[in-house]
Length: 358
Ligand SMILES: [Zn+2]
Ligand SMILES: [Zn+2]
Image 1: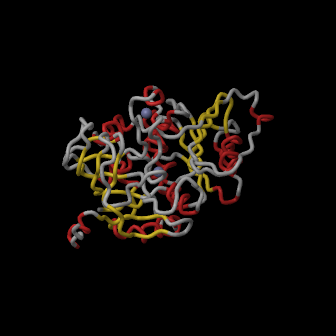
Image 2 (image 1 turned 90 degrees about the vertical axis):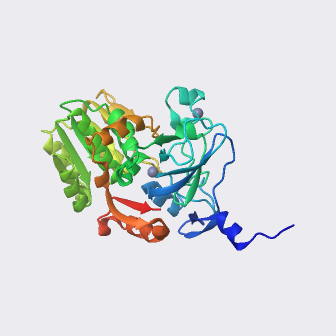
């Protein structure tokens, strides 16, 4: 038996943001991420970010996340090591990590529903260790990583791990935004903003952004919102109806995840309209079928599949989507605790996405 030298211990450890129950987290030493199956890759994180979902986890809203878990499900990095079964990537490749892990082979994956992969889905920073760390293990690397061009602006592309596919797939695609449509987006956080930016692929006539934070509404205007509604007075429905000649909107996108915002969507939807829910709901929501049953509307829900990442990569590369502008603050990865503080006080700090640099 030999005892490990200090140097060997250092090689086999890494720093990571570790969850220790509601309200408790720390940047501390963990065993370095390593291959467990031959379809895994280990990625050295160069850019990561914090998601609203991470704040929910910190409040204890996601009981699947247990003490000792490394948080984070968004990131970019350099492939450090691949298992023998990984054919699409090799050491040294620069990659985007999807927030959703997928095998690409099961029945759900074959339908393009990666979010419900039999051996994946949203597991990173949830039921397995995540990306707010120096290294992360990515299962099913071939289907869960995307190659990035050399010199790619990581602060732009990191928004494609989660925010843009989520806003686009759950909001814009499920809401079937069409040319000439009137669209309302309830919630002007990063996800609502991603829906706002990607809805413009389809040239809607109006995009009305709704939020309680006046700064975010001003930013939304600079991102292409045609009108804004400050809902602090609780009268968002009346305001949107007034802006649409009493008719309401063709598409109402819910990007908050609380009962009142889903109620707003029900109050502003025009006949034939679509309500697309994005928000993560922790409480029951009232459904007013007595008012909606004869209005020919559709209500959709979705967990992001990230199947649109290849398309979004091309749009960002072409310069037609300025993803970078969602990043408002930048920290070193080792300052992640301070970054949570800033992101948790988003209104005061005027924060959208907070970038972490490895
Ligand atoms: Zn997220
Ligand atoms: Zn699968």
